Image (cartoon, rainbow, N blue to C red):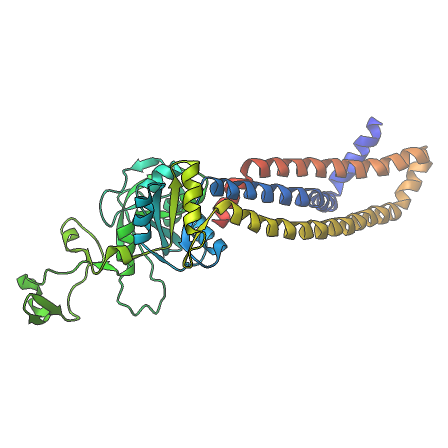
Amino acid sequence: MRGVLYLAWRYILWHRWKSAILIAAVTLVVYLPLGLQLVVERTATDITARADATPLLLGRRGSPLELVLNSLYFSSDYPQPLNYGQQQDLRQSGLVDPIPLYVRFHSQRVPIVGTSLDYFEFRGLELAQGRQLVSLGEAVLGARAAEVLGVNVGDTVLSSPESVFELAGVYPLKMPVVGILAPRFDQDDGAIFVDLKTAWIIEGLGHGHQDLTSSQAAGAILKTEGERIVANASLVQYNEITPDNIDSFHFHGDLSRLPLTAILPVPRDNKGRVLIQGRYQSNETLQMLSPREVIDQLLETVFAVQRYVLVAMVMVAVATGAVILLVFLLSWRARRGEQLTLLRLGGSRFVITSLMLAEALVVTLLALFLAAVLTALTITFGGPLLQAVVM
């Protein structure tokens, strides 16, 4: 038997290209359905874990999925906004501790998340370098965002305009990087975090400009009406917040009417959670969601599609197996001269058949080994690698 296996191994080495193609085909047939199942399950686990860690979510009525994807995963379109005053109402209820979110802008396709310091404590985010946000215009980056943008503490990031045809006169904001978060292997790794007011300044709802009472701004004054000064288009507006001009930044109008994309109400206890959900159950303009319920509905669709994909893979596997079997049969048929030579040398038909079967067995065992290695790599690195590619 050892001699048969040796001859089979030598034949495989001699016809290495044909053998490599067969081994690769069998490996993929075995690995792909299993690898797909593992990746989907790992992704579902990561997605639901973040949803489980977020008990409630308040936003404007509309698509619940869009609101959850934007607020938790920073990956959806900008939902209809609600007012900042809604956070004040939640805080006054005494039932929850609200965390504001404004997820609308990007820096080179990296999402900019406007929020408060409570968000870092809520998510358990820790700094690997630098310090936390303390001033207007500063940014703290997730580990993957810093890597993608190629920046470090002390560098700057620039917000991107929402459109190349931006006509509103809102300039990109240059923000110093004051801290980089430790890796968490979740969506927070790929985000830029700024103060809520900084996000409003990016939108142009707040701004800083020259002091119109100074002599340097005399050329920018269009007219003066009592204490009211009207400036012309030559007025210099700042697109970077520095210690020298930070005092000139201000907001017009009522802050309670400024926009948020969502609010994360953190219940103080289970009773508070039930009561606050009841208060918004019949609200005509706002919706209070349980993110886990929304994600479960999404995963039902994903798993339904996955079943169709697995059925298709099984059909492809059957077809591939038939082709591989045909290759072996044609190979045996083409080697009749070799078989006759072995018979004349005294080899029995049993030994010749065993030799042919041994070749198929060695190819199958090598393919199973490679499939096992790929499966182990998927289990170990599949989650972080998928997050690095998709998020």
